[in-house]
Amino acid sequence: MNRLGGVITSSLLTDHYELTMLSAALRDGTASRSCVFEVFARRLPTGRRYGVVAGTGRLMEHLRSFRFSPEDIEFLVGRGIVAPETAEWLERYRFTGDIDGYAEGELFFPGSPILTVSGTFAECVVLETLILSILNHDSAIAAGAARMVTAARGRAVIEMGSRRTHEEAAVAAARAAYLAGFAYTSNLEAGRRYGIPTTGTAAHAFTLLHDTEQAAFASQVATLGKQTTLLVDTYDIAQGIRNAIAVAGPDLRAVRIDSGDLSVLAAHSRALLDSLGATETQIIVSGDLDEYAIAALAAEPVDAYGAGTAVVVGSGAPTAGLVYKLVEVDGRPVVKRSENKGTVGGRKTAVRRHKPTGTATEEIVVSMGAPAPEANDRALQRAFVRGGDVVPDLPDLAASREHLRQCLISIPWEGLKLSAGDPAVPVQMLGGSA
Image (cartoon, rainbow, N blue to C red; front, side):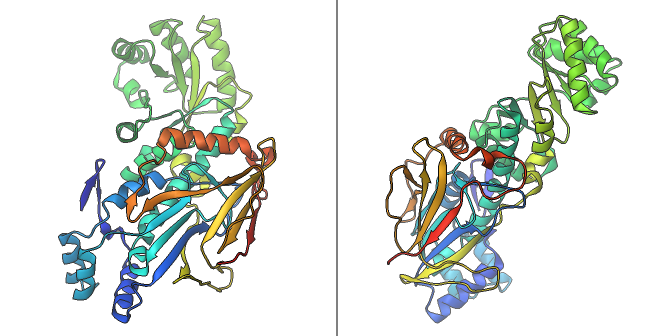
């Protein structure tokens, strides 16, 4: 096991069936065959018009330390999962191949070759669970979060879902939400690990701790100053707002409402704040918000949204539906023909075509070749790993966040609708020459 950025990672993230294939391939001599695996989605989650590539940066971090420790080997041999010859191979394991793919923050559609992993069968097959677990989770979070950001129409959205998911998933979710355009997270580990701005306020428990609501507000303001946010719906919202302004004065930064009919309450709260002279005090709303609830509040005087549960579960689509499939062996395309699960053989090359105005029109994917270049094409794949080493010029989280913002601007406006519809950009799969 290796410590990476505060996280304990283990190569036993590998799945049992991957080591079954590895063991058999080592024994029959096919383990060293040159192979190409691809990550793609057969379809988008129901109702979605685009996917978002997220987690690639985290994947590269984990890949750097992906080794099988003596403790890992002891477990595998002791349980009879691998034979001694497989254990010996795992002791020496280090990925030495190449990885290419879509940049983090890129949009994807059904059939988009999001990630291409090249190397021997043995060294590629043991990465399947690591790759899919990271990309499926983070891409699902980012896609749902991007829809919330679009629905917010420029108003800040705060990620606050840590208590609704696994402790490590919470950190990854905060990163993916920030990539998608969220302004802040309440998760401090995400702030430390990835530099994401953090924010937060008191919960109802703090108000209930004190004898009066005013006493709780006074304590919070005395400690944190008037730039804090006071939670005003523990008892009566109107009285809570009056108490907040009485304690902090009209220059209180914000109040938060976490329950009730937020549309009605936001309007009433704005009117009350204005009547008390707190015209600059912001209103933050939270409480099981998803993109649809945020969109429904677009006309209300809300300044920021706090989203929790919906974010960390992908807002109804907890996985991006990505798969990892073998598409080439020793330079020869291979295909899976299972009903409804067929694949297109061969290494893919992809470009996105645009109008002169910058609006994306289609994605061209070519197997065993390259698209004929046209004006306003943008190549979608870049190098991530060469010869087992992560390339040094990968974009940081801030750059990937900006990349996604630009991608969302480029798709036709219909692609940003929350209603179900066709993918925002159609994908055309073409053959090619080896």
